[in-house]
Image: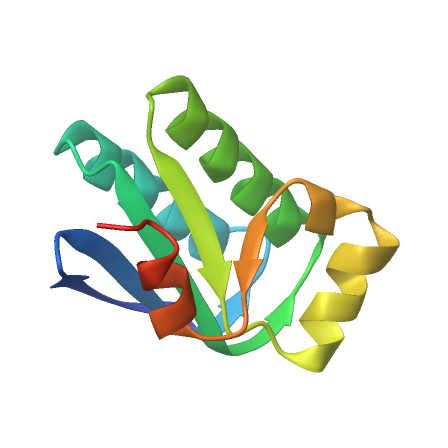
Length: 115
């Protein structure tokens, strides 16, 4: 199943709703390209809504880390919202929860930018 991405803007913040699996191959590449495109377009505030992500593998995690890193180096910030219980546990075990800004809901992530 391909990863679907629904991008919209809320109060000047780019929100990307991910739907499907974030795994090695086309899905990870598509996510990487999407983030790259948004950064190139000058988007500095990005929220990835993970509520419909059914599965993520190590390559998917690597893609998220890389996206987070490239956002940072370009003065942007990338935040995650609506992690499922399983995904939250994976981030805890891998200590990646300390890397990402994680919020329980999309609205919490959006308001964390404090505009």
